Image (cartoon, rainbow, N blue to C red; front, side, top):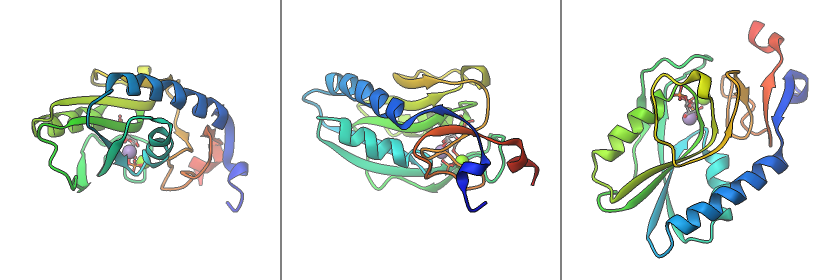
Length: 182
Ligand code: PRP
Ligand code: MN
Ligand code: MG
């Protein structure tokens, strides 16, 4: 579709709500890491928007690194098979590491990532996610900072895609049924 708006069903979380929530999360993260050297790790590609906005909401000086993993491919269901498409550039041994995600759905991606990064002996390893779907969880994950709990519906926008599209919507919303049909 030429107009992304025509593909949308409903706006779930507005840009203003996202901004306000990231401000709250940033204040808590600042308090937690005061005086510490913090590395934030964004999970490509979905977490790009959260990383960019959260990083700017923080007062704590951070360094940034990126991991690219994918478990969804082009579909709407998690395959459970996580592939590393790009590893960290940095050695995280002894570092305070905060994983930043756009969404925890089944939890399979993050569960795998926590195990993987945890085995590299960071000083600490915590998780911040903008969105979480409690009803979709297949594995329990200890999340330090979660922005919004949302219903078990497929959502797009603010980094989240359907078949690589809709990531650049400034809000989080659901897609109209006709988008999946075609
Ligand atoms: C999405 C999302 C999370 C993950 C959550 O990434 O960005 O990383 O799925 O799903 P889970 O909790 O069921 O594992 P995706 O694999 O689609 O890659 P992308 O970030 O490049 O879109
Ligand atoms: Mn992702
Ligand atoms: Mg995706």
